[in-house]
Image (cartoon, rainbow, N blue to C red; front, side, top):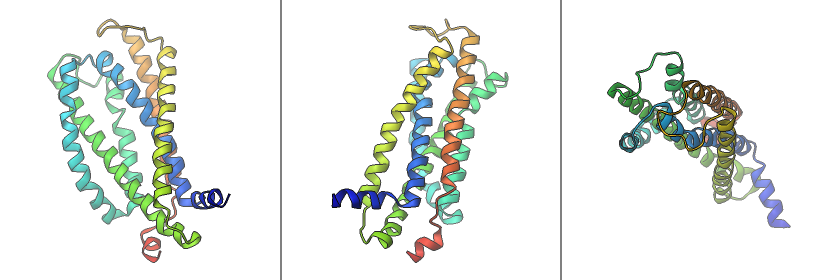
Length: 236
């Protein structure tokens, strides 16, 4: 009973709860987009398996850039402001190719321009997502001292375990939501690239963009209530 009471006391930290709820909605948004990416890649953009594989190479560069950008943003703007800004940029960049295609302002399928544009957008998007993850992890680390002052215990293991658990568990809800979007848009089963009607693909995009955007904007909105500033962390 004592251990359970200590666990509840630790996880009741206000700033941790903010990060916890923000991570929930962020994981759901990521689950939606990640689950549907294979459908967009193969059917909406009609990329080949080789092209999808080559696109992964740009993610290595994204990782290096994010590792350099995240600390710089943190020093310049503070972790909270930097995380909110980077997350907002990510939620705008991720669906942008889909939106541009719906408005007829993106290269046509099968052209080299399309592949390179998608690679650039993907690299920027992944950079923003990794940088955001780094900043959020740093913010969670700051909760340790804040909680220690009120509880007398250092509980970084508890905080990171709880945060990791919710992201993996709730990410599955995003997969479930993605599974509901497909039949809603009447996406055919066992479809081959080039065989799906344009109207069906547009409906898939029109359903995915708001679902992803709403979940991610809720995540960012909740993050605004994080209460540990640079000054407060230094004081702690």
